[in-house]
Image (cartoon, rainbow, N blue to C red; front, top):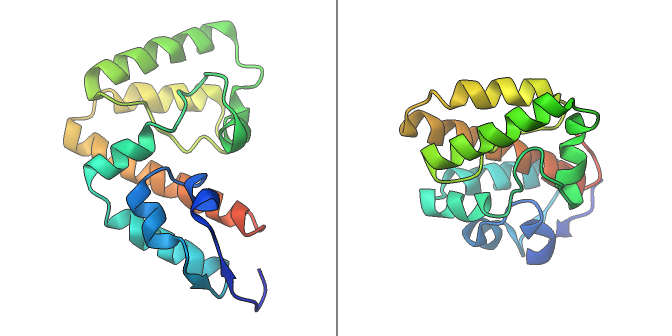
Length: 155
């Protein structure tokens, strides 16, 4: 994005974050550039309730599952993962969902399967409040990356 102002639709933004409240806060406004859009996205995320976060989580695939769209590219670190690592991630995903009631969310971009597995194992030891804070940080990172891609300039 250069000097022109751009308005993004709800459909475009829902690919960045599936929370309807977040989309409503960010869509339809005019942004002067990527930095302004990303700042608005971050501010809107900070205002979300946990129910809004859960709505966004429901749109994310499990790490290691066949992903589509941006999630596929973001999980490129899974490409070539050894069968034992894939199996451990699948088991870890189930344990995580049993413990916390939602999908394990991690900003997968730039991380290997082994790194994601290590994070999953570490976060399984979190108490619910600590894990909710971790989820918010990971979601913010994912949304920021996707907004940067939306405007054509990956960070």
